[in-house]
Image 1 (tube, one colour):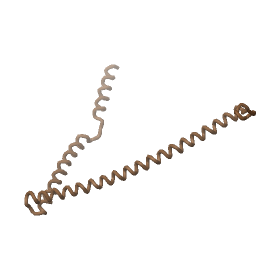
Image 2 (cartoon, rainbow, N blue to C red):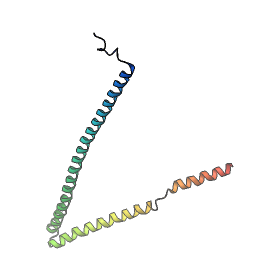
Image 3 (tube, rainbow, N blue to C red):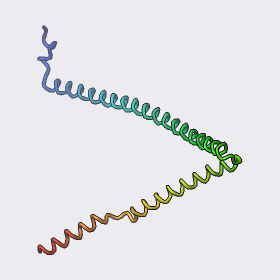
Image 4 (cartoon, rainbow, N blue to C red):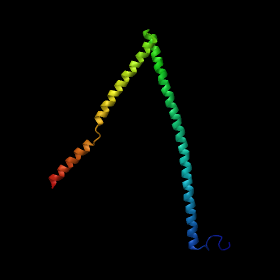
Length: 134
């Protein structure tokens, strides 16, 4: 072996410089890898979101078709005009909306106003106990 081939003749400054350059290169390559990985994951997430939206659209149309089928079932079973069967389905939907609205109003009323009542009460108790100690 000739001197310089194994790096034994390099000065400390050259070794530190080489290590620094390689570390910088490693960091840049890690950043590029992270960017590529994030881009790949973003593509997969976007594809999943698009397919999820399509599934939601299909479910929406399926619900519409189910409601039409229900109206035609009422038409056949109750022997009423088609408009009356559709009116029955509409009434059913309005009753479901009323029920859901009442539940929503009850839940909102329980949460309003959004103040931390238990935390305030606990702070008052803590203050009172500290005042007694003093």
